[in-house]
Image 1 (cartoon, one colour):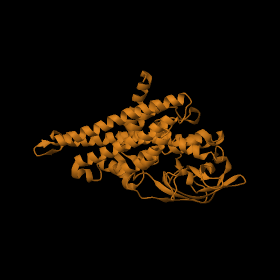
Image 2 (image 1 turned 90 degrees about the horizontal axis):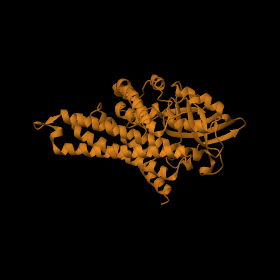
Image 3 (image 1 turned 60 degrees about the vertical axis):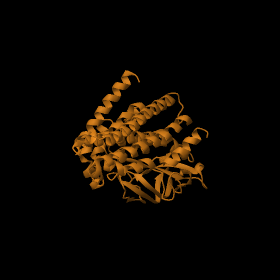
Image 4 (image 1 turned 45 degrees about the vertical axis):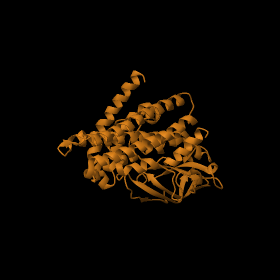
Length: 387
């Protein structure tokens, strides 16, 4: 890693850490109880340039490699200590890429800059009540009528689903079943016929997650992304960035659990000694650090490899996609282990609302499922490697 990239990473990490420690972490418990966080946080993150990381300059963003963005994701998770904040605050990172890559220029300029300024919220809607990872089986339809598409169907588990202003929706425009009939359509959040139902969750309590209902929703045809029938490939390509982001978040949350467990072990005394003086506790902490170190090394390597592939024009190289899938599993398993061990070390306090480890313990499973469940990741990695 060259000196310039190291300096940029350090500066970005410091900016993110200060935001997380001063404006996010102190409020997370209250935001969880309220079931949302203030929309003003979007504008604050935009002011610091965080929402625009990785987006074209002409749309108000700052081009950034995976290697540059990585510490921002990790540090925000470690010091912000809330998956719910990360999920909703950065839902545009899964909702906007298909718009940037495949929308017409007028639509890109209409939609992207206000989101990167924190004025509008973008979301992605793929999953349906009748199916999760099987994207090719989706049933939401978009029928062309003149200059509009008429959308009918449902989407569920949609992050930022309650207050998204723009929703990138996977729809079926072709006849029959399978991947070939899938398209991507950008739906305005205020479109007549679109309704939303808030979902109650185990974790990510301050993130608004919803089921979306489309009842003859008319969408101007100019909001079709790319060509009809090209949506499946867009969805698959979009997953890689999401999975790296999930892995980076999992690493940060693992570190947050270790931070809390280590501080508690040094302060808490049992049987006349600090917890950390007991061998069994020290070994738990070492096991946590061991997994964190391996995850950190792997995610750095995968990020650098992704940057190299993109520089060479080899987007979605099979061997790299396999690494992303396996990394996502490893990182979230590390998070699961660290959350479990931290709660064990904290004992009764680990079971109490308000501790970092308790919150992260409840958030583990959505990280292991979101962006592709473990079983799907293993199967996709095997196929990418030709097994």
